[in-house]
Length: 142
Length: 100
Picture 1 (cartoon, rainbow over the protein chains, first blue to last red):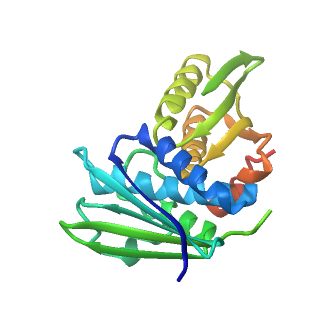
Picture 2 (picture 1 turned 90 degrees about the vertical axis):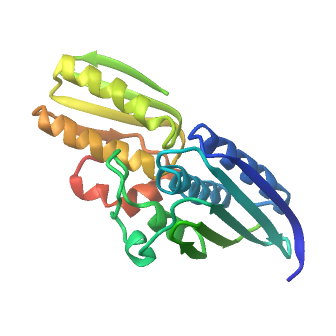
Picture 3 (picture 1 turned 90 degrees about the horizontal axis):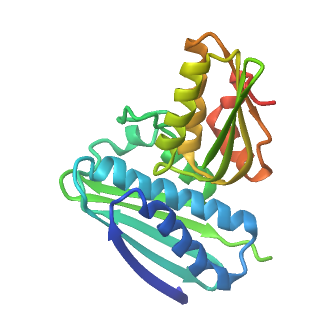
């Protein structure tokens, strides 16, 4: 695995930082000459992952969200969005479309969107320790 | 984020910029407030000015569908940019018959 570039980012779980995370991730991606569609897909998937951290991992408190982003062979992007929040007790259930534990007009589509907009999505979680969502996508060149 | 106009039993909400979990609640409150006072027959959500939307936008549409239906009106979702059509399609909102 030839890592072309890598960055790490951490920020507090404020909803105002959702757009910040999207902006940083898309800016870091730009040197790979991605298509507009690829940028939109990755921004959307990252937005869902970060929102999950804010809404579900740290529901009543501010915590830290960590993003580790790698560009491999200048064409594959791997983004790990991690938290140290409450964790997910049933990952399979949490990934079902339309399933949500939030009452705030959440559509329950977060993981479905991540899976649809990325080539691979991996979720690891330990209750009381936190969750890591890894998104992978092959970049189509312009 | 949203410009709202009222005319002839219609409330039109012209959405602008990015729709995510951070700003969706403010948009929702603005639209619901106008609908509750104006009681329109039709609520139009115009997406022509939206540059980004995640599933919070889907929640916004579904919530407004429930709200306007409760008030006895109907919802129309118009001018959806091509880049948003995939997430709209994924949500199954097309089955509500609100996309124009």
